[in-house]
Amino acid sequence: MRINSKYFGMRIVLSASAIALSLISTKPASAETLADALVGAYTNSGLLIQNRALLRAADEDVATAVSTLKPVLRWSASLTQSYGRARTTTNPNPIDTDDLTAAINLAADLVLYDFGARQFRVEAAKETVLATREALLDLEQQILLRAVSAYMGVIEASEFVALRQNNVRLLTQEQRAATDRFEVGEVTRTDVALAQAQLAQARSGLAAAQGDLVAAIEEYRNIVGRKPGRLVTPRSLPTTDASVEAAKSIAVRRHPSILGAQRQVAAADLLVRATEADMKPSVSLTGRIGLSEGLSESEYSRNGSIGIEAGQTIYQGGALSALARQAKARADAQRGNLHVVRLNVQQDVGNAYATLNTVRAQLAASERQIRAAQIAFNGIREEASLGARTTLDVLDAEQSLLDARSLQVSARAALYVAAYRILASTGRLTAKDLQLPVQIYDPAAYYNLVKDSPAKKSKQGKDLDRVLRALQKD
Image (tube, rainbow, N blue to C red):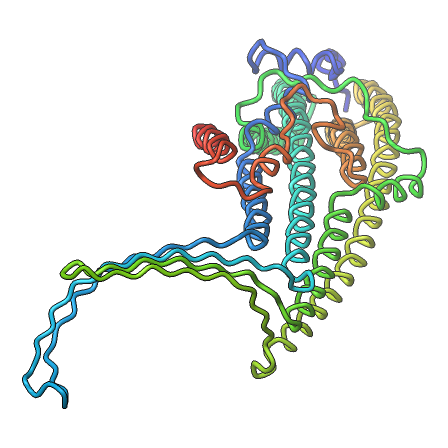
């Protein structure tokens, strides 16, 4: 069987420039970089907004704890109508009473000394705030890494669509050529059926690739906050440490998960000391001022007192001892959690480097595979033109070349995600570390306004109200 070579005159051209032109034709003219996507994710993330609010709630725990170190001032007022009838031995005639009395009282209490119980709780609340800040940074890393994955996912899916579209065009021409050759008796019905089956499979692959592109665009929209424009493949990979051990050393020192776990240990230890101090005496300063006046009579009373009180709970059914043991158990649990977090972070660093090395090897192998598959395809095509190869051989060679190019597309996208995953595993995938052109969220700004537990009518309290109104508008 001799196959006419004119039907194989078309060469497969799927260079990077051809793919880029295909993307330009299907995307808006504006080009977007990875930095643009990261800025969008940092600015529009609802998760970051949610957890910043949770951090502000934790800041208020410090204000609440600080308030226990300040005086407690209370007032009370009453208006009492009393009535009745009385008879005494000295006065046998019943006497009716009908009095209206108004009273107002002002009381103040201040704990002078409690063996540090309240101060320990203040420090524990501060440590919890610092741990919450680290949790916010860790979440920021996860969001930015997801943005990188979404960005490269759109590029990968777009290139797959371009590959599949080109494959469908080639196989359509192949199927038409097989039909023409069958009509002139150069090939059999089997060759036509093979070409038709391969074309149907290519169309199915194109539909799947288009569906994957839609899903990738939706993921991008979810993370970045807008539909992608024409995405530009990053020119270079981020700088990573030369060795896994060096990266692990950095991760242990600065990864937000480890730093947050360390803060939780410190907070738990402080709460242990607070519960132990609760079982000791406390000394308080008390003051009272009162005024009572009878409105139906001219009687009145004014009184006041100031004093120092000391007291201690001797027995409460073992509750205080149970709370102290519970605090110690929780401190032990936090130490165990720190150990687990440290091991997990180190494992993540190792896994990230293993993934990067694997993807690099796959990318290099795919380039060699493409060259070999291209040579094989060209050779099989020429041999088919001489009758030494069948239509099936040509279609198989074409599929092998498509698979090689697909592997290269996947490996190239995975390479960037793996490199940025290394940054995340070492705690350096933050807007500050990446020097993104955004207004970096300052977690200390709100804390500095509330840490001293300002009164609502004070100047600091009014400043805080303005900040809260601005946050609600945002």
